[in-house]
Image (cartoon, rainbow, N blue to C red; front, top):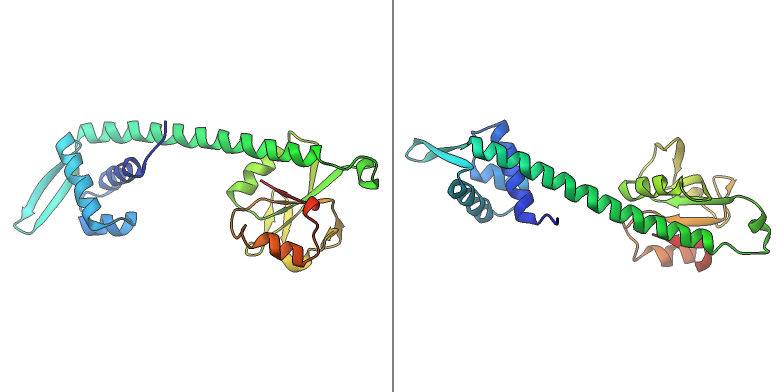
Length: 207
């Protein structure tokens, strides 16, 4: 099932009201990053559905209380959310695995690099790179380095190097054969940036 924005906002509101029932519409709007009018409409809908009760504390102040039906609905929405997230993860992992198969399948035949292990470097860290790393375990590609413009530290045991350490054939002195872009950030600018650094199109893989 596909989860729309209103479904997600409703779920988050129910969760926040369970944690603290003294939250105002304005604070919900701010915390969820939605318009105050939308927060008001969602709350009115939840009251109509019986998930939330309005308790008036003073002429100008009300308190929103999650009902038993609201708690049950929040649990159902949590299941829907995780089911949707798992489905999206599986879809993305399948697409990334196919992209890695294409990189492996395009390896040159007869060239010196065809007779040794298929050494690759990831360009980018984050969720996409993590899924790519999992998918990589089912391929014949070997990850020998990771480069990122913004991040540092380690990525599955490998040190994350800055872009300045990257050449067309090595990352911080470690040789590799293909650069695989594992980030969607700045992908419109990245082809030109890589070309300026001397990368040939056939040496770069895109997920």
